Length: 160
Image (cartoon, rainbow, N blue to C red; front, side, top):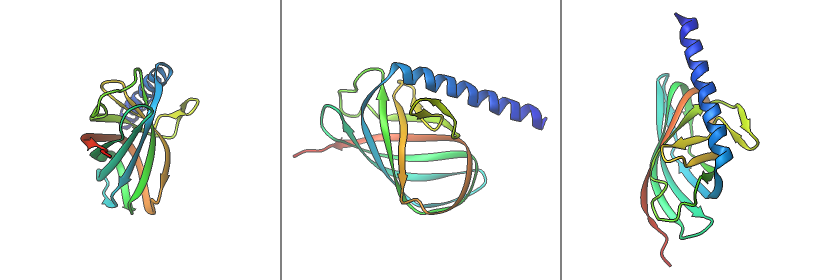
């Protein structure tokens, strides 16, 4: 039974990696998403952290998002808050405010899929992809593997 579960998980990771590679080849960079991540204590079954994000598109006004990052699977430890920077990739330029609203999912594994895009990339239902570029300020002890998800909700645009 354990081998069957492991096989199923490996097949799911491989399918996700293939889908991530296909999406990356069809997408272009449309901006950067910078998120401040709250600290947390995580447990064996997973964890949730709050996000405050700023999207700086290549064209258009700066947008703000609130959200949550969730991990399901092995996740044990304590992590202080930090900052994550994602490159936002999309098949078409997201030109209306709030276009990043939605749920992004992906397998949390360090597998190189395409040059510059790993399996840590998260993909939404509308094919917008978040490719992590850097994580700073995260301190603590944490062991994690599993499926990650980010939920983003539009919180407004920057007004001068």
